[in-house]
Length: 353
Image (cartoon, rainbow, N blue to C red; front, side):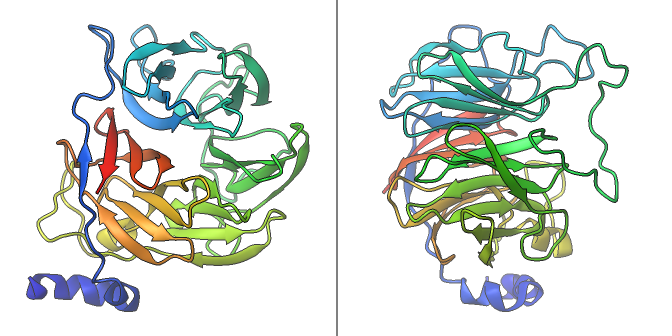
């Protein structure tokens, strides 16, 4: 086994060597969770969240059968009980629904949905009624209603508007932070009343720059963690956007792990995939974070808030207790995690031992 690992260890250099002894965390995954109505299935599942009652909200790229082949509506927000029983659909047929990306629940059980396709973030009250809307989608009357182009140099930011936003989080004062995202490469801040404050970040690889700020989480001390996916790192900021530090996850996959998409990456492709933060969550009041890796190697990591990897959960695959496209995480406690998978079209409910 050591002979098989040696080339990869040399490629990843020092950080990988320092984290070779990361333990595997034993866990169970609840079969057939949650329960969908007869004949109904999820599409890709990019987001999952849990409220104070234990109800589970799943943002899925479903509801596309009635649209054209290009740019159909692909978003439904579904609610389930803690036991996985279907409750209903939130915001059915909503104008903001285009391409689901993530869902989060704030401390007051308000439901926040981030739609990458419409460039909008919608806040629902616990009863499922729209109360705030951030951003604006392109008008159907416009001639150009196609997707945003990834141009270089990047498009200039516009305060209050978004281009493919990805996630949302809140600090202890109720201020709102939105990662924006695939085009704008920044973090936007609003105050607790929903008023615009500022934004920070630009496209690049330096401190405070981003290449796909894909996930965001905030700890009890108001440190802001941004999953800078394409830069394969997690950056940490204060509430004014001041860069504090960054860390990476450098744990090689178990030999024999296979990708669910085509050929298994090797060499530089593998080095760029390891630890790329697809999703983040911090249990309330906890000093640890869970990080979901991108499609391959597809693992979940338990990490201390200073960046030390404490354990690894699962591996790439299609079966129960395996992951592919762990795009969203919800962690009500350090022993209970929900994983939204885009590639496997499902949500897994995990119990850590």
